[in-house]
Amino acid sequence: TNIEWCDSSVNPTMGCEGCEIWTPEKRWCYAGLQHHSRSGNKGYASIFEIPEMFEGRMDKAAKWKDLAGTEREGKPWMNGIPRTIFVGDMGDLFSVSIPDDYIQEVVQKSVSASQHIWILLTKRPKRMSEMFGSGSCVEDCKNLWGMTSVTNRVSLKRIDWLKKSNFHVKGLSVDPLMEDIPDIGPHLDGIDWVVVGGMTGSGAIPVTNMKWIGRVVAACHNRRVPVFVKQIGAGHFIGDVKGSNEENWPKDLRVRKMPLQKITPPDGWKFNTTEYYAFKDDWFDQSSPNVLRHGAKIHVD
Image 1 (cartoon, one colour):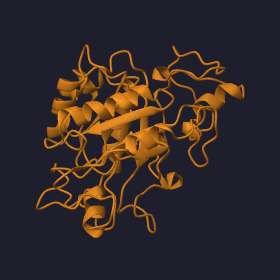
Image 2 (cartoon, helix red, strand yellow; image 1 turned 180 degrees about the vertical axis):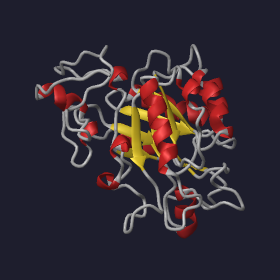
Image 3 (tube, one colour; image 1 turned 60 degrees about the vertical axis):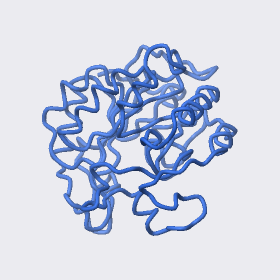
């Protein structure tokens, strides 16, 4: 996948029943736009707003080669950790119409394939937390991470529901950032990882202000939460519709950290998991395990 913060993606469901970036008035979701442009193609939901289940995809993903200890071309921050798989980049697994037993089956297959890291991202964390709280199959399962999307101040309330879940890693996808969220800091207590990014695509509205992203990054630094800047967004740089070329970014936004303190080291990987995160002196090459393997200086801030 081209998604900067994972190696792969798998979609046991396709489609979503709508959210703040997909309404009759707003058509900003890339998954929705892809469905509409590829309507009727095999492997897609017939209608994006009516999610469909695709059995068998999780079984195939579970058999993918483990990437622990390998170098990722173009993604040095992923080096050495297990293959990291985004479950559901083309829809929302926790859509109301998806049956509980199917969601349970998807999650159980993730738990069983412990050689990979599986990331569940939803805009419906209430349902996720009700299904996967204390005593559920995710308890003590370190390869399964739960995340929710925060795009504006109103959606901050999703974080409270996420915290009621029992995932080993609880993360936020502040992407696309639709407005300034200056009060996000106090909400980060109990959060293990934050991904932040601006609105993408030609004609993206609103254009994400880089200062908004900077405030999220600063809040994460202040709360000692690893933060990953995915892209700045459209409308900033000529010829870069996503704002994904980090060489164009202000230096304080050039940060891509993984929550290493929560990742279980593969056999033979000498890594002190009590450390916060590791990175090279170079400001952008924050390449986790390889830093330790190559003997570079370790920083904890």
